[in-house]
Structure formats: C-alpha cells, structure tokens
Length: 332
Image (tube, rainbow, N blue to C red):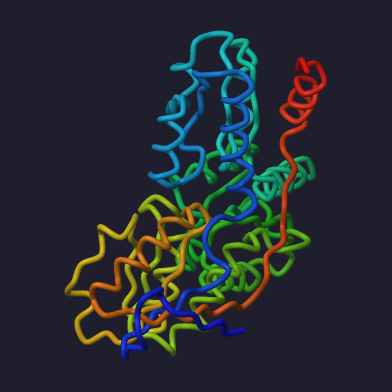
C-alpha cells in the first residue's frame, strides 16, 4: 500500500524519499524499554541493566539520563541490588550468579529469544548436537550458547558447515539467532540438510517477525531507489542485515545512527532515497532524517507499507504484579 504525503511547506520535487513501513521498534524492544522505564518509576534510580537493554546508542543514553546504570557484568552490581537482563537474553550461568549475589532480577529478555533458549534446552535433553546459526560474540548468541555449551556448536556460513564434524550425524538439530539474514540463513540450513539428512529444526523459524518484515521491505524497495539509508546503531545485528540485503540487490546502502552521519557525497546523482530503521531504532530519529534530507532537495515523501504489525508482548510477570500492587495501595 502506497500512502503519499508531502513535507509541510514544500512543493513537488524531482527528488523523492520512500519511507518503508514497518520499520523501527519491534514488540520485544518496546517491552524491554518499557521494563526499564517502569522499574525506574516504581523503584527509583539507580536501576542496573546488564549490557545494553537494546542495541541503540540513543535509547541507552536516554535511559542512562533517567537513572539506569548499564554494566557489562553482574560483578559491577552491588549485592542485593535490582538488575534488569537485556532483551538479548542471558545464559543459565548468569542467572545462577544473580541468585548467588542476592540480586533482584527483572528479566526483559524478548519472548522470541526465550523461545530459542527453550528449544536449545529441549534438544540438549534429548541428546542432540545443537548447531546454532548466528554471529560470534553477539549478546544473543552468547546467551543461547550458554544453555547447553557442551553440546552446542556455532556456525555462521556455509563454509562453517562444510568444516563441521559431529559425534552422531543422525542426532543433530539446528536453531538460529533471531536477527539473521533470511537468505544467508536459508543457504546455511540447506547445506546442513544436505550434510545431515536426519537433522531436526525448530517447529517455526527462529528469525523473528520484525527482522523478516524489514528485510522483505528492503527487497521490495531496492528496485525503486538509488540509495537506502538504514537508521540503527553499528552493533545492531538486524540493522546490519538490512544494509547487506540491499547491497545484495546492487543498491548502495548505509547504516546511520542519526541524521548527522549522512554524508553529502552519498546523495550525489541520487533521485530516490529509501529509508528504513532497525528494530531498536526510535521513530524520532527517522523523522529527523527525513527532515534533514530536505536541504538536499528531497521534499517529496511516499510511505510504502508492506504489512501491518500488531504484535504485543506482556510485561514480565513479577514487574506487572508489583505494578498492580503499588496501584492498589496508592493513596487516593
């Protein structure tokens, strides 16, 4: 569905912006950010957060200014304090450490990441070698690997699969990081199936709905634009994948934190710019970027909506219960 509109105060121009939808925050990111904000409202600062709550610099800076204290490891959290686990999930070892240090945990792990953790545990209990498809050192992958490290191997590429050796080729399964490239993951899974015909996989793909929708949007717009700008931070896996998907279609693409990172030379000889945003990028950054392109003559804006997203995730049960309790006892 195409929804054309004009930037206020401008006339039609030859240069155009195509604004992709859906874009930006997914349900898991909205939930994680809400968890931090509600915890700050309920308990006051400081609230400790292990790792970045989501991979976006602007979001982290905003929450830090509100009183969130971001730490790399639990050792940095005072004993008995309250700590939030990020949307990317943690390993069982981290949960054990939190208990041993008497920390009060609020778990903001995305439910779709939790789904992958549960799959890993199920396959491990059944004696499978687990092939985890994902990017080394990504926070989500580190947490998932920790579910069954003794029986899990990590692969990123088809070449990794070719080098893979497992104890029992008839007892192999695969799971994936939730923010991977659809096409690259398909190729890896296909090679795994060729090498291990008996391999088992998850009932439904582990790549999340938001990652899929944003990649499909980029594929749809690539033939219509001269350049793609993706709003998102450099450590955002799903944002990086959007750039790669566009580049595979032979269209230049750049990942920018915000409008200030756009280089004028990128826009030379460009008549149509497409804009999307990774699943952890705030909408205000997108709108700022749209307005900033006006100074380069991009005044016409068309919204290209491929799909509606109506996914919502409930708050963690303990936080939701505490919020209701405080509401009930609040003075009138």
